[in-house]
Length: 404
Image 1 (cartoon, rainbow, N blue to C red):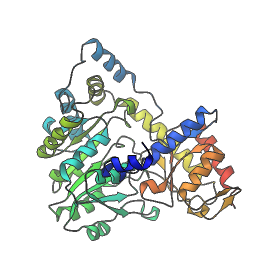
Image 2 (cartoon, helix red, strand yellow):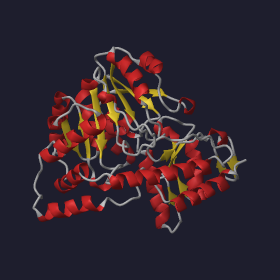
Image 3 (tube, helix red, strand yellow):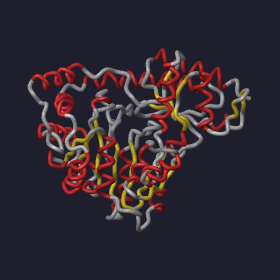
Image 4 (tube, helix red, strand yellow):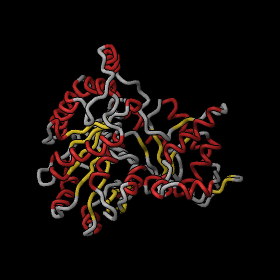
């Protein structure tokens, strides 16, 4: 079949979707590595730590104990109860097990929510910079993504005034992540309360709060969830999971905490798509949610040290405009000072050009900011060893200096 024939045969929803830029750059890095190139891959948002031992042991025990059959669609009751207790303890959310749905990763959780709430033409306000899949998931649900952009000077956080101005009669939902992928920005309690005061006035609007990086937060005052604000609590869908805070990316476990009718809708959607997620992974998750958080805190401490290292190194690169992330494990510098410059056959017109130049010449894989709704930026993951961070930043400094 020719390319043209394939395009005619494929559904419009597929043709309308963009490829994930993070996965595309990771794929290119792997291809170069396979050719023997010593690539440092700082494009992927994946902890470089192993899953803690007590979680792995629970998975092994689950196999020995015969947990090899279909699990309930919404998750094992013990896991849902453990998550509900965690949401009360850590986030002040009023949910019980019936309000929780466990899915195959937080990405599926987000898709379930959007497919449950969004009708064709409904507008979803996406606070930018945003995670790469938000726009595409909204489009897949036949909604209309509306992007609200916060600049580096704003700390990458949208103001209540921006939010109020963007709301229309067609606005159905708001999506954001905090700590943010790609910026590491963390909305404070005061900032979330100010946004909630706007949302409270518009009863048709729901909030999808992506808190997957919750445990990777460096603010001394701790973490706050919008779902803990009583005036909007029943309209906030909190999305979280095990990938980041517990270093369990490959286990594929996410969840939501939401009003019972929303949870029931997500369970209905999931029942027709994947059913319940992996039984063995769920038993491991029970050990994670009820177990010792010391390994998670140790990982966060390491990320904090790496954050300080990469910020100090980035500040030494002329033309790279930086800031200090408050959570997650990304730096999202403004690199527009390099636009219009060249080095041999490489002419840098935008962030895509710069990332291609840097992977080809410096052999460092990064992600262009266009994928996150911020074309003047690029994302650097510091979920890597300090040795890799030092080497990568040295290469960046060397090859950026060659652009004239």
